Every structure is written in C-alpha cells, then in structure tokens.
Image (cartoon, rainbow, N blue to C red; front, side, top):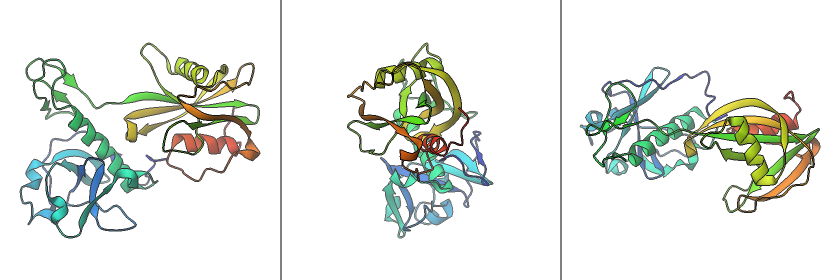
Length: 278
C-alpha cells in the first residue's frame, strides 16, 4: 500500500533543527509540488540547489520528517519555479506505490494543515508554531491544534464467495470500491461499519472482523478495514446520493486489482484470491 516503503524507514518524530544544505524540501502551490523536470521520477530539491537564487531559504524552512537519514522540510517561497530545471506538477503524481510519492503526499498533508490553521478558532489571534512538538497554539487564549486525522472505515461485505462491490456517484473515480464512511461522534468503529452498510446499501451485517489500517493523506483520514458477513436478505437498496452501483460479484467475476496503493484495492484482491480468512 501507499505507506509501505520498505526498506526505507519513515520517522515522523518532530525535531526543532535547522536545515542543512544537503537536506531536501517540499514546496507547494495549491495542489502542485515543486520537482525537477523528469518524466518518470519525483526528484525533490535540496537547499543546495537553491543556495544561489534563494540563499535565505534554509532559515525559513520548517522541519517535516526523516526518511532513512535524510531530513525533509517545508518551505513557502515565491519564484522557485523560475530556477531552470524545476517545475510545479500536480499532486496526482503521488497516487503511485513509490516512496517518493509517500514523501510528497505526507508533506502535502502537513502543508495543508498549516495553511488551513493560521488563526485561532476561539479568539481569532494568529496561531504560533511550537518548538517542542508538531503543534499550533494560541498565545492569547491557550488553544492547541494538532494535525487533523479523521477515522474512516472500509467494509468488505461478503456472502459466501460473493463480495459487495460499489461505485461512487458523482465522482471522478470510476473503478469498483467497497462501502466506506467516516466514524461519527459516540460510535465505535464496529458501529460505524453497521451504520454505513445500512445507510448506503440497506443491508445488515454480522461477524465483523478487523483486517488492516492505512493512513490516507489525500483526505486526512486514517482508514480501518473490516470484513463483515451478510446477515439476512441480500437485496441491495442504494443510497443514490452516495453510490451509482451496488452489485454482488463472485470471486471469479471480480476484476483483478492492479492498483496496490490503497486499502480498498488490497481488500478486494485478497478476497478475490481467497487469501484472507473469513
């Protein structure tokens, strides 16, 4: 999946340390990231690459995380694309199973969090950056803000050798998917599974079994995957505001899943291959 970057090691512990010339940085314009002009790979810039054109860049950088022994920083600076050899490209390039894609989307997630939380929601004063942890705080009223992570369930509803497959309504994504939904206040994840399945397809489930989790930085979510057995009638009643398609497919009819970055894709594939114990 997206986060599986072994043998490289991701360390997200916060460090209050200045950037060195060999450290790399991420720079964003909306949903675009700065990379070296290359058709095949995501090559992120080092501070040494911009030491002549932007000599103060290291002093403005904010530490993000470490991959192996290399530190990555976030910078907000105009005119970086004017340096020959560098260009902004869409963060859709991050939707691939590649350790550089993982770096980019985690950096974009933190960039978005910083960008969306500049002022205190309680007293409207400007938020400050903590020097001891990844935290924004208000010096006026004491409000603290940590990075946004929303829990969400992915549900593989099955009936013997059949899996419930869905397609979203009114979304650009057109491939098959599984039931999915956000955890609500006061719910356990298992209760979210039951509610989302009922709301989206009108089915009851039992024997809920946890499968695996995945961070999904594209939407600030932490996905929790479950398989759940059909309980009762198999008649599908679609919530057409959410779903365009809901069908039961036997293992032999489930399309092979070639995309390996998502929890949804992995769950569909392990069911298709009957490699998960249910």
